[in-house]
Length: 185
Image (cartoon, rainbow, N blue to C red; front, side, top):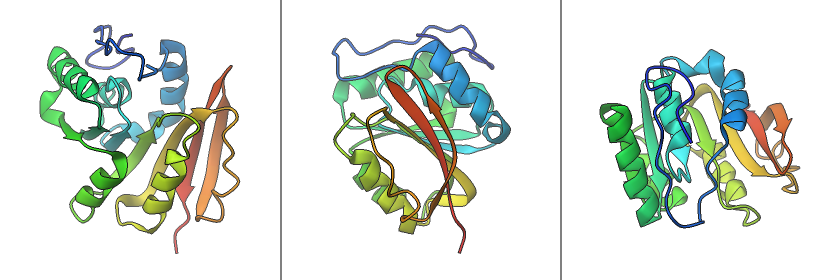
């Protein structure tokens, strides 16, 4: 796994030795960032369920101003820290070693994000919990995008009810990315 574009291009990233993380493939990451390209430069980025930190690091490499990385796995946190050092992006990154919801509560009132990316463990409905929280919080900047990586079997029929507009859905062999925006008002 490597950074595919920007100032840290071609730098290989470390992955945790255990199998709890699913690093995003280079091809999927390229497709993801082709969609995100218009909003990445200068944005504040939140990488929930960060794993290796590869998505947030890619965002920083491509011009995001800052990224908060959130994961509650000790090995993943060590890996994110090492990857930020290796890419020389430590100054732009903040690591929060906690579960996603407690991190969101801690960030409330302190930070507003232009892009939130989450890749939670599949089939545990953690994305629904996060989307529900974000729908009533002050963490999303106006026009912010929320990107969810999930299995193809995950149902998101509740998005509209929570106040989100689906911008785009991109399906791959076993998973998908949903790009959503919270309706204003």
